[in-house]
Image 1 (cartoon, rainbow, N blue to C red):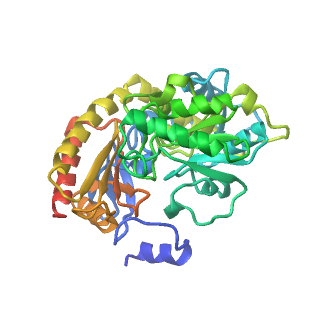
Image 2: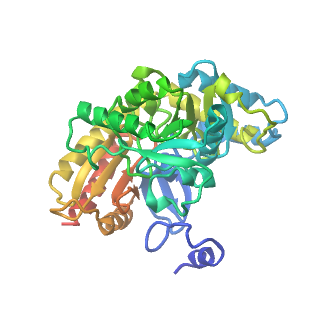
Image 3: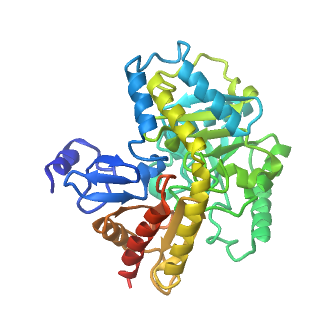
Length: 427
């Protein structure tokens, strides 16, 4: 055990998870690569949990942060803040939500917590609809709506949560149906559920479930849900903490794959926009955002230095069409992985879109999750110079692949080759 690991164990919580049998200390990064304290170099296919969105040590972001740090780091929301206003203007315009207002937080958890506060206040209801296999953060209210047992340490909650079918396309009672019939069955389930409960405040849903292993329903599912919800005045909260900013390639926001019935009422974001800086936030229609009748501020949400990072990062993302790069390079990567998967009995499914891909592992010849195989692949890829993640609602048996959106074709091929060797070593 390393000295740093021993110190970690002695002073930090037991439930603070670490990857690998011998945990890794990352000391610095550049582009799509990071280095550990022993000088080993890794191709990074997880980006600090989908947070290093553009690149490690991106010069444009580094320069913006450095210049802002030389002026002022922080003043709170009690004072006018030019970088915060400028980033809010850009996000409001990009969100697709009419008459949008933006509130900045320090994390995705806090963003979702705020969205729940807004929805329950606006609707005067503490009933929330959430998706099975979902994850929305680690605060008390966010844990209360999490549909993934592995990330739900308590059943206590200030909210009444009802879980809806549809977040996982290839498991559950409707898995054998075609896409149209799958959506129809999920809508019928939603309608039935609404007939047995008091009027809910909102449905909160990740367009692609992140911690759940990059699972999703068919395109159009949430558009069909929205028609049912809108008839009853129930709000739709799109949790874009992992799917936002073009990561899926096909769309800038995950909700746009379900946009036939209009945009969500509330959108939450975090992770990639800061490229490592602590930025989260909520976008909502003005009438919803302004429904609170008591004072509220944020000490650290929207602070000048994180807003400078976010502005520089978003500008780089848009000017270099990283959404298009995610579509092109991600398309090549998923086809390469599917070719490999067809020859590896442990792989149940390769799924996702853009640079947000999941590889679900099972015990060969069964539909039973194999978390030991997932752990083995993580160790093997690390030993070969590649960092990936894992997740999934069935015993953490899905590999999660989410590199920075500036990934090159050559780097995608290199990472795929390493992952292929690790998967083949399971057989």
